[in-house]
Image 1: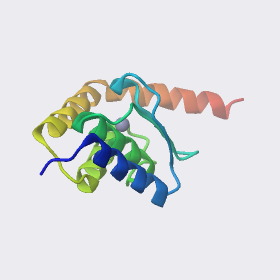
Image 2 (image 1 turned 60 degrees about the vertical axis):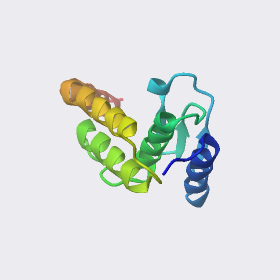
Image 3 (image 1 turned 90 degrees about the horizontal axis):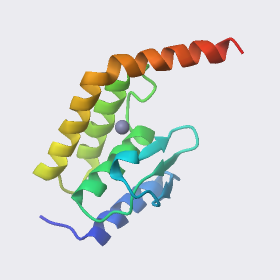
Length: 127
Ligand SMILES: [Zn+2]
């Protein structure tokens, strides 16, 4: 099975519409993609390939997927990728490699990220 970029974009938009999530497609680098769970928005690049499709679904997974309140970034990241894979219309080897590379990065860096978040939360409680 293969899909056109337009079909992948349509699918992402459909999920967003069903869940009243706002998509901003103005980023120019895939690695800058992010989600705002509180306001239910995602910031992505235009969907032009299976890679940008996978990342868009991953960001939707941060809003719609399970375990997103976990204090552990690795738990949140793994759950968002799992959600992306489960909801994708296709899951190619390039998409799998992208997910694995991202999770591997977080496996190396999760302690620092969690620590930074903990001290941020502690500081904001004290103000
Ligand atoms: Zn993520």
